[in-house]
Length: 407
Image 1 (cartoon, one colour):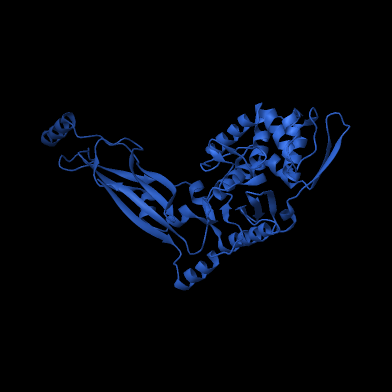
Image 2 (tube, rainbow, N blue to C red; image 1 turned 30 degrees about the horizontal axis):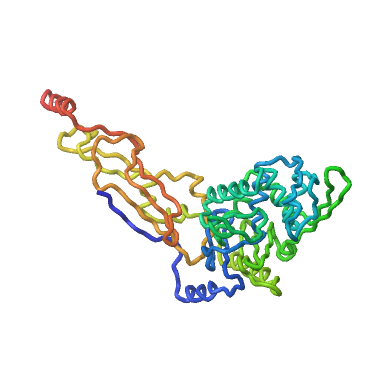
């Protein structure tokens, strides 16, 4: 049998606070789908139809860029194919047979959103665009993006056997988080996407190109970190960006955020969501809060538990032994944190075995403690035995009887 104890810890929720929060949470956004994510933990702080599958236009190029950084050499020479050269505007204007260095084309992709450059990079890395989009899909799945289907490397609307070229605001936020927080090439990604202007030549040095960053948000808010715009007739205006202020990194994704002539809607939504994250959320150390609960403190110190049919230290034939049950919370655990509202609470679930049967090994699992936030598992730790204890057997029983009567 396993006993379950549920406890909530945290700040009290006052009615007036809840009402004010409900009003704040009812953000009026232009985007049909939007997500605000904590870059550190990946926790979604706000969403509006965040799981709705929609075209994502040139925000696609975020994935194209990070895959190129991770799988190719920046000094690779990319030869332009006929198909790459015929990609529609926005384009660099490359010709079939032109050759460029990989790094220069990544600036072309991320600053100016050139469709021909993205196509050429995809063909260079995988041989064909179809193979490259399969690579994009595989990467998305590894990141937990289960509602994303890449058909083109540049974000132009397309369709294959798995449906249209699409993602969700949640999935796009996960991809952006990977690019700036987790990828081994995160510094290179930020360096490229933060560049204001880049001038380069083809490998012959005869053709020169200048790319300017179209991410206007870099100059709109303190701490603007990175971003990528996008637009197609099907997708509307889209954006994925991030802001870092103090110790907070906030990621925002916007899909279907207006159509011409409303290209500035995305900046309004971006600023509104970032400010909401800055104002409403603060980092809290969740294990430190959990330790406010007496049962957790007891488990941290070691809670004595009786073990049925085990050998007691006093050797009494009619007694059972005990072990200490521990929840091992380290200094590192105490420092773990997550962005939370002041009105949110952490729920603790303690599951312990009602009956422990001998023998018990050292560090044997005797239960578990689960921390939940808004019904979702935040972290789980095992309750373990501090030592081992043997089962009463005939030999032990005989020895105890002999000791007792021999005396």
